[in-house]
Amino acid sequence: MDMSRKEESKRVDEGEVIPLLTPYKMGNFNLSHRIVLAPLTRSRSYNFVAQPHAAVYYSQRATKGGFLIGEASGVSPTAQGYPNTPGIWTREQVEAWKPIVSAVHEKGAIFFCQLWHAGRVSNSEYQPDGEAPISSTEKRLRKDITNDKATADRYATPRRVRTDEVPKLVNDFVVAAKNAIEAGFDGVEIHGANGYLLDQFLKDKVNDRDDEYGGSLENRCRFPLQVVKAVADEIGADKVGIRLSPFADYNDCGDSNPQALGQYMAESLNEVGILYLHLIEPRMVTQFEKFDTKWSLTPMRKAFKGTFIVAGGYDRSEGNQAISSAAADLVAYGRLFLANPDLPARFEVDAELNEPDATTFYTPHPVLGYTDYPFLHPVVIHSLTMFVS
Image (cartoon, rainbow, N blue to C red; front, side, top):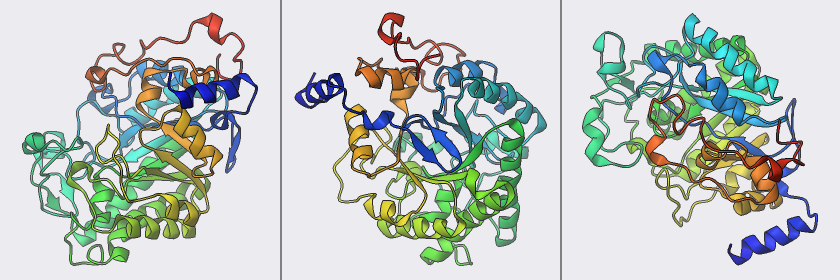
C-alpha cells in the first residue's frame, strides 16, 4: 500500500467522511453515493436482444440510491457496429429489457439506458440488406477504438448521410428514448463519444461536410444538439444526459480544437437544460491507459450548470479528490466496477480490488468474466448495510 493510500485509510479509520460515499441530489434522483457504473459494452446480447443474464450482472452492481448507466444500445437497424450488442428499437428488445430494469429497481438503484449509433464503426455484416454503414463522411476508419491500425480493414467505407436524412436519424433517437422509458429505465444517456455517429459529426478530423451539418463548430454540433433537444422534448430534459469525449481520438475521430468543442457543447447543452454531462478525461488518450496532457475538463465543469460526471481511469483516491475538490459531482467507474460488483462497499473499507480480466471483456459467455467476479467476504461487509443487500 503506497503512502497516499495509507494516509487515506488512516483518515477513514478515524471516521472522516469519504467523499465518494456522500449523498447527492441529481435532479429528481436522490443518490446515496457518487460512484456510477459507467456504460460498458459486454457483448452478451445475442441477436441484438438483451438476455436474462444481464439482470444478474446489473443487479449485482446495483445499490440502494446507486446510479447505473447501461451498455450502449442501438437505436435503429443501422446503429449496430459490433456482435452481441443490445438494441432498443424493436418490441422484442423493449420486452427483453423490462425484467433487467426491474431487477435493478428491486435493489433501489437508478438505471439509465445509453442510446447509441455506431455510424461508420461498423460494416455491411451488421447493416440492413448488407448496405454500407452511414456517417458524416465517406472516409474509412484508419484505426479502431483501441487505436489499432491493423484492424481497420474490418470496417467498410461508409456512406455519407444526406442532409434530408438527418431528421430521420434524430427521430430514431427519439423513438429509442420512448422505448427505453417504456422498458422502465429512469432516463437515457445519449452516446456522443468514442468516435461513434454523433462524434463523427462533432469532430473536424472526420466531418468534411459542406452543408448545414459541417464546416463551422456550430454546424458540426447541430445534429448532436438536435438529437438532445428532440429527446428532451419527448421524455423530459430531467431524464436526459449525454456522454462526450472531445479530447479523445478513439475510432480515428479527433478534433483540432477539442477544448473549444467541449466548451461550446457544454454551453449549448445548458440551453436545453438536460440532467447531466458525462465527460471522458483528456488523459485517456487510449481507452485503457492514462497519459499526461495539457487539456482539462475544468472549463466545461465551470460552464455546465447540471450534474457533471467524469470518467477515465479513476481509482478510489482520485475519485475522492475529484468530489472533494468539486471537480465533479459524480465519478463513473468502468473496469473497476466490472470486476468488483460491490465497488462502493470495497471503497468504504478500502479493501483490495479484484483485477479485471481483459480477455473476457467482450466474450459472449453468460457467466465467465461477467457475473462470476467475487464479492467481499460477508464477514468484511456485514456492517455495510447501505451498500449490500
